[in-house]
Length: 102
Image (cartoon, rainbow, N blue to C red; front, side, top):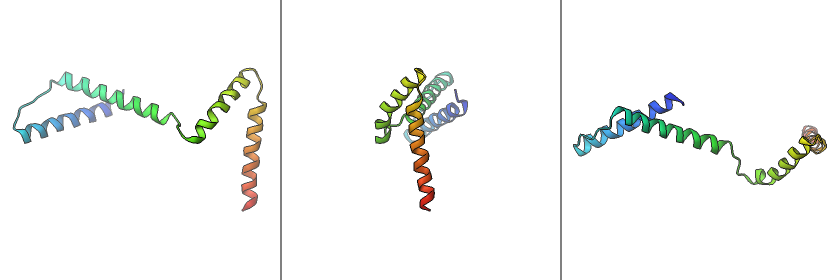
């Protein structure tokens, strides 16, 4: 767990409580162990969201490429890399074409 993130979240919670207590004139407190637990849970949730969000590609291109990639993986497991090689050749040819346009 990222202790820096958990500490930052705990500090933010403590600050929010300070603001509430100052404005409302209350003396609301949270025990340190509960504050730490809440901060760690929030940090874990934030890290989980970030890791899942940035590791997923929901673009139109990704939606079209995903079935092709699955097929290439099946072929690769069977020892057939011809499709992957052809795609790489098309990309290489495309990039060479861009260089010749300059």
